[in-house]
Length: 290
Image 1 (cartoon, rainbow, N blue to C red):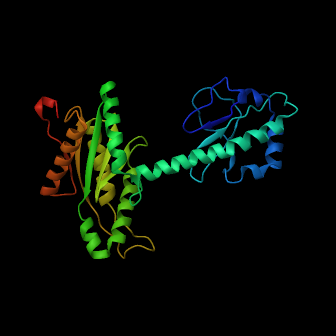
Image 2: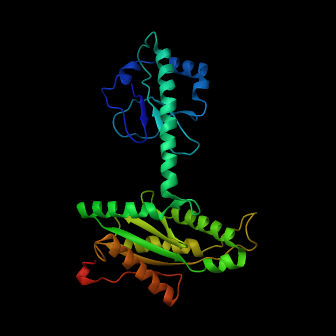
Image 3: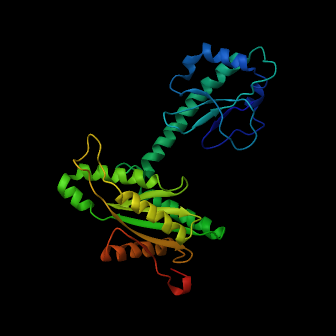
């Protein structure tokens, strides 16, 4: 009764595809899957859906896990009790035949979007997406009167890494930095490569002291152990540190540009003094930043 649910939308309850699959028994589905496994080639593993899903869902369902990643890109919902219709298997055949190109198209669209918003070197979001994402989050924060924090950080010695080991090693270092940072932030926080060796993290619903905890955690994880220590790495690894600046909405600034300038200014202040530390923006204009 639950048909294909793409990532970017859902099928309304009145959709006739729900009724077409009503009452299919577990045994019928398992038999159908075994006889028609070729239809699922390239779609991923057929698995029982155990994770929660928004809205109402049957207690026993099957799901087609699409793509090689752990992300669930599309779902095939089936009600597995009741008497099967005489042409139930044929209907399932037809559904998958229609679903396969739809899923393929959805994945192609996602891949194209990834090319636009992802930074190839660091494997995080890029400056282009940052310019789109931050205003949207600021608008949402303003509407719901919620805080938002921005962390800017700059690698202190990437130029030396490039000079000593070459730019290929520098690029791999950027990638490993991205991995470490993403391991220390929430799933709905966003990491962006702002340019060169400068990154920024957008933290929705986070005040400055929460951002300070995140920045300290990330700083320690970057400085705590060398990079590129694997079998194909650099002998002894590469030591890297970073300097951080924090600005929060609405305490330090109320606009995108103001927030960027305040976070960058706090970071530059740290870099001039001792590096490998975290700075917080100064409150200006009685808390009503630019």
